[in-house]
Length: 269
Ligand SMILES: Nc1ncnc2c1ncn2[C@@H]1O[C@H](COP(=O)(O)OP(=O)(O)OP(=O)(O)O)[C@@H](O)[C@H]1O
Ligand SMILES: [Mg+2]
Image 1 (tube, rainbow, N blue to C red):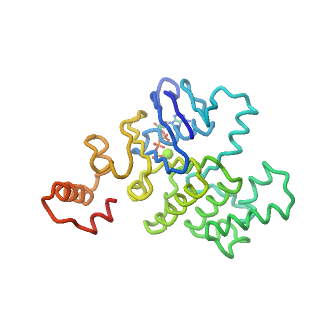
Image 2 (image 1 turned 90 degrees about the vertical axis):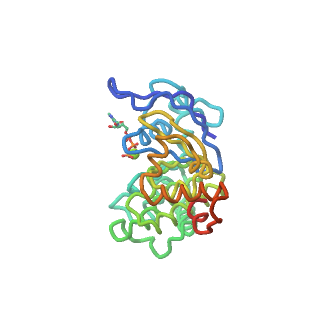
Image 3 (image 1 turned 135 degrees about the vertical axis):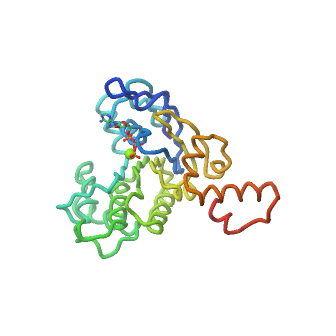
């Protein structure tokens, strides 16, 4: 579990994260949503220690990460896996070398042990016959799988994904979302995902935090989000006419004014 208590982060005189508190729970996909520039990436970078908040605390499993010494921070970082936007694979390393990289950095395992673990995670993300391929030779969806495999290779307690679906088609996005959710539940990882993909929100949003201009505007889950009365949130999630119509129909259905529509249920569950 990660507890975020009243964090503030600014650059110069511009406050980018304004007094945000949240609890990120294990075994759940904790989503941070919000429009471009609302502060999602800065927030995530504060959580993993790439930025130091100006104020507030980030507490990992009861221990204050913000005030830890370098050794303490290093211990926490070993338990963190990160999937960067665009996957951020090393172009000059092949798939298995990319995945092995954290093992080279943080373990003293033998080559055979490392190879075994690399193959385990490759199988877990359903990537076959790609070990020797270079990033330029594989598709965007495969790159994400490699990024996920690299992020989980050290068995992290915490997984951070910044826009895991960027650049992917809707179907591949769904497959990647489901994979992240399965891994989160299987290994009880505390997973934090930045996204502005509404399919992800509905599909895997166990917990959703909506950021608006650096502050937390709303918090809930994928069942509650469509009934929210928060105007800013509604403007954000129901930006398209199609989704607005879907929401209106769901409201009518809930009020018993129209018959239950299975397809709509699937869409909005
Ligand atoms: N290193 C930095 N120095 C100064 N300002 C920054 C820095 N990083 C981010 N910002 C500013 O912080 C604000 C929030 O940026 P952030 O990248 O967190 O947005 P975001 O919600 O992740 O957007 P997107 O959806 O486009 O990824 C922006 O106004 C950005 O210009
Ligand atoms: Mg971002």
